[in-house]
Length: 211
Image 1 (cartoon, one colour):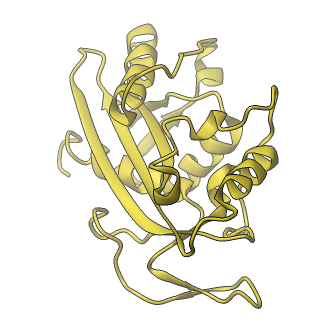
Image 2 (cartoon, helix red, strand yellow):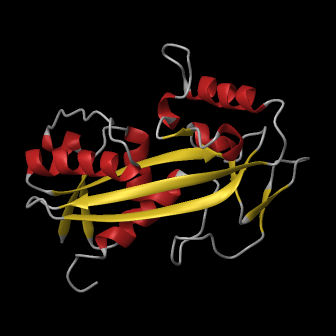
């Protein structure tokens, strides 16, 4: 059974990855399982750089193949912001996810709707040898006032994918189109982190023998 180290210390993210990738013939390891204490600065100039940097750091220290990801929300009315800085998009020190969502909506006030946007995700799988595999995808949609996802706490809960229709009266999502662009046979779920996990499995299949 293939052992994969998840290159993150985020417990919520780890739980989601396990929920989607368990049962695929993989043993998913966490930094805690190995007693690793490692923080990697996300200072790359692209999503791919950040995802690769995290996965490579964990692979080098642990000796296991590692999976890392990076993602961002790009809003057309804000000239592509927050993008790479989605997780730090607020002038408020110590801002929470709710603060960042509020700041995003504040910045959009007075601009023409719909607030079209694009969720981008890149997953890197790095082997101990340094061999690297990348998969990326983009999901088009729009920013809405209400939270678009029933779970999760990141700012992208304000993002509604284009393959879902939004009922502004109830906040319910109803599936409209079968496929988002760039994600193979996956579906673009309102909770954006799920996209990353699906990409991760697509990336892992590149090098796992027999896949």
